[in-house]
Image (cartoon, rainbow, N blue to C red; front, side, top):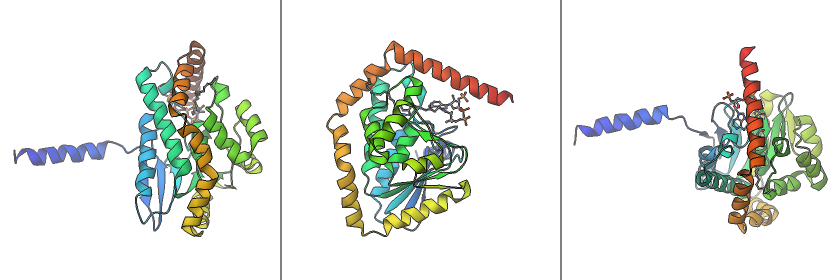
Length: 280
Ligand SMILES: CC/C=C\C/C=C\C/C=C\CCC/C=C/C(=O)SCCNC(=O)CCNC(=O)[C@H](O)C(C)(C)COP(=O)(O)OP(=O)(O)OC[C@H]1O[C@@H](n2cnc3c(N)ncnc32)[C@H](O)[C@@H]1OP(=O)(O)O
């Protein structure tokens, strides 16, 4: 028994050192940087969504931490959005759990009392755009990266709560165009429509994100938190009161032949693009 213990410990230590963490948390004085870390593109599968939810929850419980910067370990991709392979040819039980994880992560991040800033160095489509919109402010790098809710381009429809968050961020008419046309925009255009607060060269994204976060943290904390709740709770409550209905809608919609064949086509196009890139 005694001889087993070091072996067990060694195994556990090996497992810990070889299991890559999906989310990296770096604590600073009174805030944390949370970096999404699921190679290659931070696509949001169930485990990554749960890891984000848990990370935010653990920071909320840390008395020293008042805010967080949401970022990525991949400077070219903030997040590729929901992992399409979770939705393609799914097992119903897993699909249901996956959607609940997405709902939970949205509710956690959108309503967290922490001050939050998204530091977006790379692309941020669909679910990636939602994560960014859940933050109090967004800084994005100038140049190539794009952000937006491109669901219609995949032949799928964003749920009402993704629409609501976009309406709250950029207003009804801009959302109508962005969502209906499945548009993604660069940082400059994002700033023009209010989706992005600061558009800066990539090397400044983190310092500007920190500056914005400190501005939020300079506000008396109970006033800041109550105001955030006053602005966001009604929107969150709309989903909270319809969690099961929303999940059933998603599962039914996702399992239709039409959606499955649209997802198959989209995945094939992504694969073809990746192969062409690798062949260069
Ligand atoms: C009537 C309605 C009733 C009810 C409605 C209820 C519910 C609504 C139902 C559904 C709504 C769901 C909401 C959906 C939200 C989403 O987030 S959908 C996901 C959308 N995401 C995208 O479109 C992004 C796709 N990816 C890209 O554009 C690019 O990959 C990139 C710009 C992010 C990165 O480009 P590159 O750096 O060039 O990398 P590659 O393209 O080569 O990709 C590398 C590798 O990763 C795979 N991959 C990329 N994105 C995803 C993804 N989202 N999911 C899974 N896998 C992804 C890609 O295929 C490559 O794989 P390999 O070929 O290397 O294996």
